[in-house]
Figure 1 (cartoon, one colour):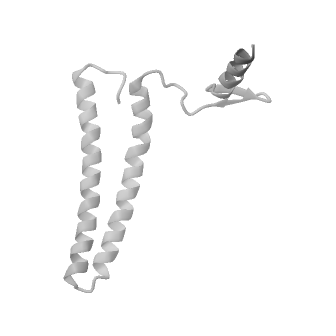
Figure 2 (cartoon, rainbow, N blue to C red):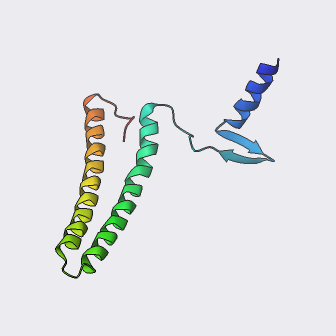
Length: 113
């Protein structure tokens, strides 16, 4: 009996649709039924976050480059920072495109993007 009550209580807490005082609240996992749906949710956060990180890395590298004063070690460090940011973003986009290609090959038309 105790296990059933606990299960019912936890099921109410983990529900994706819940009403509190007549106010409907939906969870962030609403509409996720397959692995493809989960990947879509994750990718919709990862690409913009990667873009924001790239922006900050480019600004930091540009600032280091401008304030290097022509010192070759500082210039190389700034160029390395900019290069690393661009390579990371290219790898992020490449992995995204590989997942799309694999999903197309295996016929996941409605699943992954």
